[in-house]
Every structure is written in structure tokens, then in C-alpha cells.
Image (tube, rainbow, N blue to C red; front, side, top):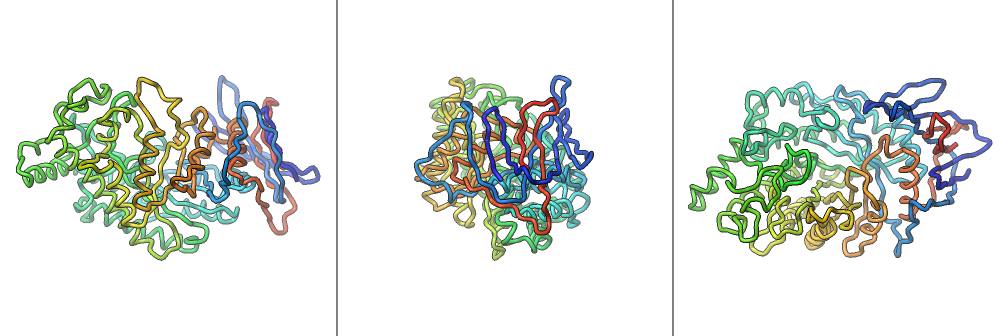
Length: 533
């Protein structure tokens, strides 16, 4: 059996004498639908009234790999081996629907087999609180996620579980649990709120971490129960198939305030989210304890609005309020709630999963917009502030180290050269700052790419993984879906895997089965296709 990566772009993994059964993927109009016809499962994507078919074929035999690389995807030559870096791929956010059913199981299975053949270590599975504990507190239904874990195990991949205590309504229509939403209607103060009174309802405010707003329990108690239930339900997988768990720490699963909650773009620096009743109460108490009661009435009055550039008002300007005694007071308090929240969540995870044989991690955002300004406003509104000579990420790294947890940092595909000069953005320098803080505290760093495909992204990822200053031993590529398995992108991803020196594709042996499992990623109009047989 041979594997070839053809630069038109096209990839072929085939064995002439093998019988084949095709599986295909269809993606249509933003709604993925899978259907079986004559042993073929397809996903299509509808563009300009034409349906394009994407597919892969996988053989159960050992394979060898040779590459013919297109001019569009440079073949990198790392200066040092990256064999120690474990490569994971994120599964779709809606792998399990809000009704707890697995979306497109045949397609998911076929994709997993393709990843196994490429030599990928494992996959990351998003697990949503709003799916598992949807109906009532303490009533858990893990059936959909257990079905996925079993398939991952059978394919021979590892699994990292991301326990998400936030909603993803804009991407998946999965929100918080129904019973939590009902409580929120009666107790609106449990959501993040901006100065206009607008609420962010995909995540609970840090101000209620230790307040019994959830049917007599605090959010931390509820999260702890969720983790314990997960450990029990997945006990057969812990430490063997499941090797890592990521705890959701805030909006989008990241440790941050939802400072850009109502923006359509990142043109501004975001706004402070401290106007729910619990955070205002905490601010008032903090101001009184420092002898400045008038400072506890609200957030900065001279901060810019969502869509305003940071220098349009005085707060973030050089010599502005952020550098004043008041600015230090407010930003110290605001960031302290963020680090306290991180400590609580990671402590819950460390307690629940101690001795389970899995690594624990949390995710930070990469808030690189406007970070060339001295004030670094996008980071301040999201809760990252350094005072008294401390780096803005040092306190966070200390919390991760205290709880023996790793840190996931996204945006490792981003480079300064592809940023708009007007954005005053440097993702490279920000990533270096975070890694430096982690190295100082002895925190293990894992990487991810940004959500969208970017120019030169694969090359930049390899450069970051080669960085010897901070050893990154795990990288998760986000994420599987229609774009991921498109011929052009999957070809580029295959070259990326080879550049990580994971050249020997693993065998996929299935006792008693001579037939090749097939996933077809091609074109119904005869366009070049990606096939393995």
C-alpha cells in the first residue's frame, strides 16, 4: 500500500488489490447532513448552486508515505526533530448535538480513521455542560459523548476532553443548561454585564463563583459535581484512551472576560464587564477597604466604547487614567477576580481528577490586537494586568503552577507580517511573553491554531513548535469539518504532519476484516479527489 500526496492538490492512499467501501461527507448551506446510499456516506458543500463532494479512503494495511509537494505548500525542513510533539485534531463543536445525539457518526468515524493513518496522536472532543446536564441539576446524560469515546478507542486514537461550562450559541446553538437559563431569567445578576446593561448569557459571571445562585449551590460546586460525574461515566477510558482534560474557564472556554461580547469586529479594545450586581458589590467592598469608597461606584467613565479605537478617549492613552492611582486600583481588582476564578476552576479539576492518569489544562486567549500600545488595552479589558513590576501573565502562570495544570495557548499560526499595520498588533511578541511567564513558573505549554485558516499558518506553527526556549509537547489543530477535509486544505495538513517528522503512517489493523474502510473526499464533477483505498 502506498500513500502519495499529489500537488494538484490531491492525495491518494491505495492498494490496487483491496476491495473498497466508500464513505463520503456532505456539507450543505451551513447545515451538515449525512446520508447512506449504496454503502456511501457523503457530506456536500453548496457553493454557487453546485454541490461539491469531499472524501477520503483509508486502508487497514500498513502504509509507507512519499510526497510530491505543490508549489503552494512549501516543504519545511525543521532544524530539530519534532517527533516528541503529540499532534491532536479538534472534533467539530457540534459533534454531539444539543439533543445529545451524535451528528454524522459515519463521517466522524471515517475522518478518525484518516487521521489515524496520517499518524495523528488523537482528537479533542468538546463536551458541553448545556448538553450533558440540560434538563435538571445533577441529572447527567453522557450517552452521546460516550459513543464518540468508544469510536475513538476502537480506531486507536487518544482523546482529550474539553469540559465546557460556557455556551456556544453563535456557532452551535448550544447554550447553558435549560435549568440554568430559567434561573437566569429570575436572577439576571449572574451574567456578565457591560455599562449599558447588556448581558453576556453564554457564561456565568466570575462574581457568582462562590454565590449559591444555582438551585442552592455555587457554580464551583456544580462544576465539581459535573467533573465527578464525568470521571465516573468515563472510568473505563480514563488514563488509557482519555489522556487529557481541559477545563472551560470562561467565554469560549478561555480565561478572560467577554470584553468583545457585542462587537462585530475587533476594531476596538473591548469594554470592561463589571456591571452585574455581584461584581459591583465586590468592587464597592474593595474600594471601601482601600479607603476610596467613591472609586467603587462603577468602572472607568472615560474608557472607549466597543467600536471606538483605544486612543479615542483618555483612559488608554499614554499618561491616561490607566496609569493613575485610580487606574491601578481598578485594574488590580478587575484582574484579581480573573485569577481567583482561574484558581477556583483549576482547583476543582485537580481535586476531581487526582490520580486518574490524565493531564489537566486550561486555555488562555491570545489578545494581540493593539498590544503594541503601552497600555495593551485589549488585554486590560479582558482581565490581564501587570502591576508592581510584574508581567501581566505572571500571576496567571503562578495559578496554573500551583494547581499543576498545563496552559493551552492558541494563535500559534499567527505572524506579525500578516497583521494590519493599523491594528498595532504583534501576536508573535505576545506569544513570547506568555511562554516566558510559563517557563518562569514551570508551566507546561500546549499549542493551538487560531479558529480561521491564515496565510502561512502551517509554517508558523512549525516555527513555534521548534522553539527551544519553551518545549511544547502537544499541539491541537482546530478543527475537523468541511474545510479541514477539502482537497487543498487536507493536502496542506498532510504536508504539515510530515514536517513534524511523523512520516511513518501507522497501520490500522482490523482482525478478520480484509475489506478496506473508505472515506471519499472528492468532487462529484470529476475534480481532483483525495482517496485512500
